[in-house]
Image 1: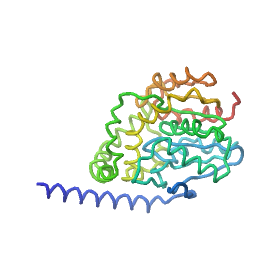
Image 2: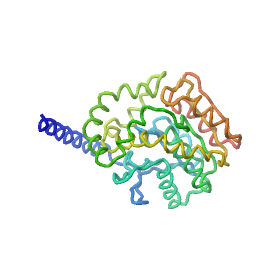
Image 3: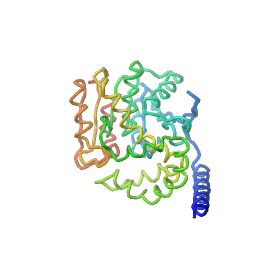
Length: 303
């Protein structure tokens, strides 16, 4: 029985690896590559003007901001830098150590320094909002303004923290090629439906954000690692939120099923006096697809 299980696991892993290679052949990287801190970071640049840095959430990668229209809108007035976070898209993520939001912010700061970016407006969605906050806390010199969309800012008894063992190198790698890969394929339609609820999934999402790239083992493991490290990270960061001095705009969907706006965006808005709050009725976690124009205005307005 044990031999049969091992054979099935090896066959699954081989199939999953082949699908990942095929996805990468069909969807090659479209941007630039940079080596920082032992990682290779993929990013795209568009427009001309003051710098604007986009940090995507979990599951997806940088084309999420193209699909919702933000890159094109912001490029009218800014130089837009959209990064693939470590382990997503075509950015690497070392399996030898967990990569917390604090570490991701440190790597992003190195990228920005290499590109000569300072005083940027930083837009983060979901986990990208956590990385944006970490960037403002650790490297306040490089952030002029924060626009945080659907972010998770305080620890809670979230079921995804059960994924913490996936941060372990060997366990995480095996999981991402076997159980994780199979369960992700089965649950993918339900997951996408839930993040866009209550609106329908826009056609642009499937056109730009390729399913097979999102289902690669490295990206599944990165998403699971982010979830497993989330509580620990925001518990540490939340003790320092009072240190944030830059203007902050919080945007959240009133019907977000993934991150409760009352427990996170509304609560943190109450702690930061120099912040604005926009709660969008009838929208869920992917609220940026509905209010890309409002986000663009928030970037351009002086608070």
